[in-house]
Length: 106
Image (cartoon, rainbow, N blue to C red; front, top):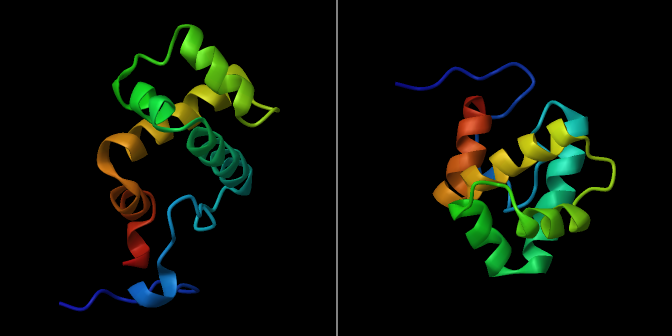
């Protein structure tokens, strides 16, 4: 069965592949901005930050250090939403995340 084309979007994987950290597929551009910055911040901090996000409860001194590196205009709510997205990425990988967030591209 061929998936119908979504108006205004192409369905070719080659034309719509989003490299890790490329959140440009997000329809909420505010969310795209903070997720992009936070993804870069976690990569800058290194594997300990990703491991903490994947395994942690998102609280304690390490999360404070991570927050200092993330997007400077976060509210408590946007920061926790971002960390939940980062946790999903850490647990399941970038491709699964991108496919779950925007499945109509595929």
